[in-house]
Length: 512
Image (cartoon, rainbow, N blue to C red):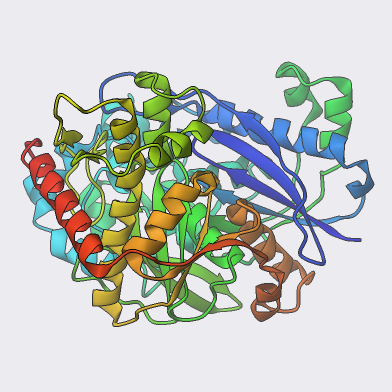
């Protein structure tokens, strides 16, 4: 049996899995890492901690699956996308990485010379001018790290999304490359030509030689070359070092951003297929086929994947707060002690009593793109209690997704009868039923919630010849629970209008 080593480098943790040649994904290993909030609205990671978490996840996986040693055909990587790292040729980060959720570059987005290019940015990159994307993060790093601009210009420093950083580190600096799906999120990339745009590089002052080489998702990114000295220095045990050294020489043959990876993992390879991943944020993607569609409704267009010279595109709606709403209810408000309690509270009352939450904790993403908006809880009365606020929090996730899917239908004319879903928040049956009701479609949850890792493994396996073609991979999808709509159109309309009213209050809260 041949295996594919799959790395899922996420916002709060790194996971590692084995995918076998029959499309079966193993139980994964999970290594969390620290989140840093140095100022309100700022979110940072230690990129070195991210890299170490990747190595720890691999070591744990090898220990649990000794039968895989010597039988791993290749590696696939999927990653949080827009998060940006500045690092030296030695691989050492200069400072903390700026996370995709971070709002510190809002003022950069408001600069007149950048605002003037808003329309062209959308027409060329498929994105909106927003702190979410990497270009403003790169500019902030250039302006705030001493001599970084000069170092980048002369090849002594690099600016990259997480995939480029990990490929560089895992190959000991031999390969510095980023796949099209990640390049698409930099706000520097012409998604039609699949190359960086010279005018945008000038606009943001980014030296092109500091950026990773744009590369197809299915490609040979080089072989893993780990050093014992580094592993010893970072506290790995002799057994862990032995396990890690066993992966040396394995080639990285697939790289995908997390959301297009989930689209591939869900078997959504045909035009009009769609999926929603409910994680820290929530991301709805529709496969556009081989021709991009540029949204008139504030949605995003990106490269999904590229296989043997053929690039597929996706229309995307990005919601910054999904699972993080549940974390807020647990960690900040103390209303629940675990996410599994949410359904009990939601089902204990008939409705929210007119309470709506718009969780703009770090601004609003699609379709509003208001980085300075702040969260709003509306409809409070003396009778409002813990259950109403918990239910409003859970419902807020479904309202946001519904709005995005309706806009996708308007942009493309495609009304799907089914939506595939994955991610940890899908464990809430209440949320999944409400989502089906609001959209009026069947919701099918993947049997495994690890569709991002699945997609990375499939991409790697296609390039390495483990799988014959992308069409073959569709047969590996396994459906779990499904939910059918049962709410009246009038009730759906009433609920959505209540949410839109709350959003209007939210938009008044920001100063953008």
